[in-house]
Image 1: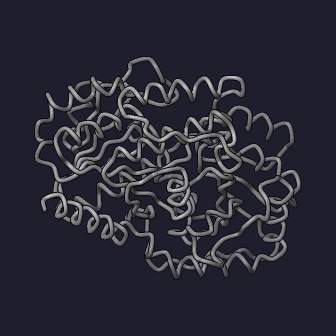
Image 2: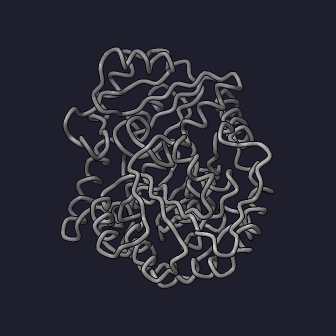
Length: 413
């Protein structure tokens, strides 16, 4: 099959969407399929573009200055559509457009798919309602959400309107972001989500398309054979790792506050960066916490450190629809601590540490329990190692492959 992947989150960014796309591309190519990736990116040299093109990765027209230092931003969808038609006429013969995210590159792909009569699959990854409310200052949230809605509606019709309620759209800004997400999903032919709980939320707010739940996976390259369970002996230092973004929606600050209530027997290594990076470092210095920041490093280096740790952390609450860090830790037999009950579907029962609340004291209580009951870590690790093959890309890609083949056949019929 010939599959074109489009995403506003791939080149020049790290995170769950990026690693998910990379793993899927690699596995699909191993299985004999042709896969091209189109992504926004920061400006790069012609030589670098050619090097990427040899790997079937192409940079769509992107803003040179807007978004610099935050995230690369694609130009207007019409500009990208025209560029794709002019420079990539081979797309007319592709079997499927597999689309991630909801910005310029993704909008252009959805529109072009309809014009070329190619089936489109929209992957809904994230809670943009929570992302917008955690990043944008309080007084500007409704304005920014309204502006994003207006821009989006110029290219994709907003036939469904989400009103403010007492569930997830509990502000005008969040209602606007749900309106954007729902109409974006409904413009595609099919919708994919990584979790059951997010699929239910999308249906609740008006997504009418068929939703296929396809959990994310970890590249087989990171599965070390014959792993032994992680062990924490009495008196050992609990080695904790954070390898998510350091940003408000990931809740690094509440986690650091929790460490003030934790017994001395811990050490935290932090990999990554984000909007709260400087604030987090200042807080650590001020409170003399046992935390070491490493900044952004390549995934291989972070994964090696993860595999040598005792406990992985995901402190987000009512935000993550899946949590790639959870299965990355699972593949290494490393238990994770998380606070969002929705994420219990990601890991096998008995293979994680769950804090009974998202507040710092509840998080600290869970960590202190593990320090005082070190034998629990080995039990959790054994559960993860028993189930870890389930998150291999080579295993989970088969379901995606089957789904696309069914769509291809249905489209021809």
